[in-house]
Image (tube, rainbow, N blue to C red; front, side):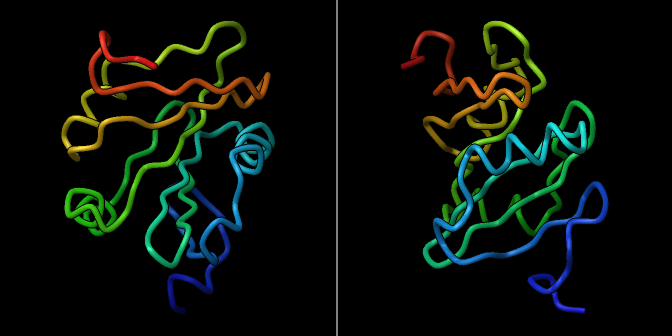
Length: 124
């Protein structure tokens, strides 16, 4: 079955959708229902919805290569944060590793959003 025809049945799965058809609230709702992190990646023509595990999104090599080549952007990922949303050092390191300046975290519990950068001192 082609990647864009699969349903998000388990961790590690991803699917392709028309660009800007998935919102941050959509991934927050999915994350709340599944109790897993989700990530939204965006390219020139498509959104990619990635289904992670409880506290992390382990992207496959294909997606990592597309992020590093700047053919995809990490728009956002979810966190199970109750209070203040806090990007982890891994979140910041990941952005730096793919050469991206900023991204967004959305709480799967409160819906609160936070834009963060690859450096603690560059948060918006």
